[in-house]
Image (cartoon, rainbow, N blue to C red):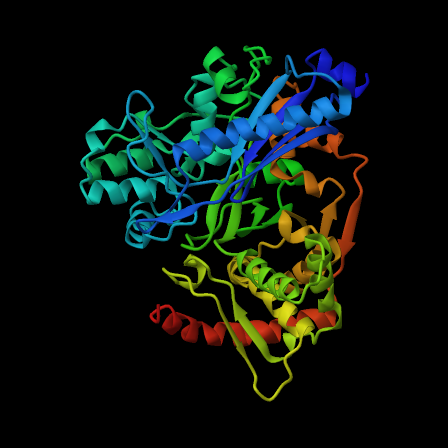
Length: 520
């Protein structure tokens, strides 16, 4: 069946993912091949001490990304999207959206980027004997309870971003188990929220929270259909018909698992963009609780261990923007793509340890290294020359160093180490550079799939295409990826040694970074 026939007959599947800086839509055909795309740029704001997006931002972004997808379909095939086989919604995990009975937001949406719940995170980790990061929904909800917010009695719904958008489009209060694992502890035998933890929370704080949360669902289940009201929010043309089935809404970690075929035990992937996180699917439970290692779920309900850092590419994006400003002042016209590729590829001539340049990419706080507040910073050895290759290598090393510190806990204390890490996200757009840095930082063979550029929106579409399929998710994804090609980077001994030397200085310099956060 041709792309035109697939779209015209309503056999195409749509995935939409709300990332930190861009919302992306991917339309796939019956063979799961992308046939059209749409995008919409947006950015979070720091308001009253909170990283947030407004409800208008969410609604405009939803309509904007679908409009861009429609334009792509019209330009390529000369047709409109009248019907779809299925839709999947994904978004950055964690955070907290609190709504009243009419689904009106009662407080600003708090994203994963916030580091204002350190006390609550520690308190809940001890209560549940289960790692509860600061960005988890329950950490933010407890903060509201402790601060006795005036709207507490009005809260009837608590969502993640993905489950909120799903609810707007379907009227169904549902969530995929992976995204749910960023809200509250999961009972992996029952494959739903932990009843034991819910009882402990109710006894300790007097709030019955499970009725506030969406219903947990597994990959392959139908989680509702597109309503007439949902069509109005999604498609400004009104051409799309209601009744399209939806898969359970998932977090970006889980759509990343789908997009890299890493749902089986001891497979691992690294998502690197605004944030960076490495997830390794576990073959057995960890021996103890580690406050900086998150326990997340695959879309079909199996545990994974995640080392998550809030900061990744944001700082080096700012530096490259500064270099672009210099070129503009000099009257030079160089495309953004060429500037990025040229500067990033300069690292191949850098010293393996970044030549005495040490950088910290903390735009926001970073829980893995105990920072409640961020402060980007560069230090360098005055006895060594400063040059672009070493500077860029330091910025790239810094982007993954917090994540590496988390991975060290898994490998050194639990013996958990994937044989292959599959990368995806903006960090790997210049793939040879991203892979070289990842294999150097982790000491593990690394790869990027040919489909890596499609990202989580493609993963959301894959999960939507899995609705009602009578085989395991792992088997289904194996079929999808059977002809996939990968670009691979083996860890180079000299690069790994150079990075480890860099990391030793990085760990020592964290004390300087902590002092620097007191300056501004």
